[in-house]
Picture 1 (cartoon, rainbow, N blue to C red):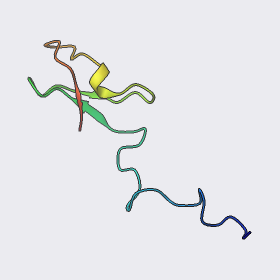
Picture 2: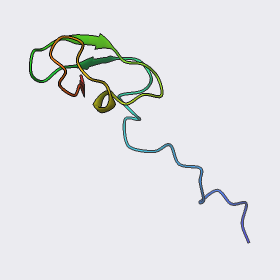
Picture 3: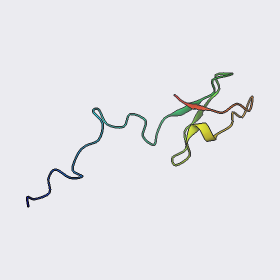
Picture 4: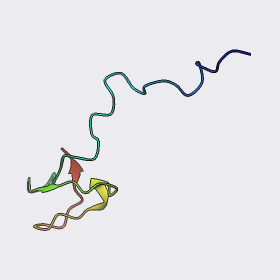
Length: 57
């Protein structure tokens, strides 16, 4: 058996994860922007202005 270099050593998708922990959440209805909180997906946040679900910018 080899050194195990073919298992679990990849870098993930080409270009890496573009979203990461920093960024913004934007409301698709009114365009309100809030800072993304790490560990909380944008789709779980309600817009403070209109109450719609936010999306990642």
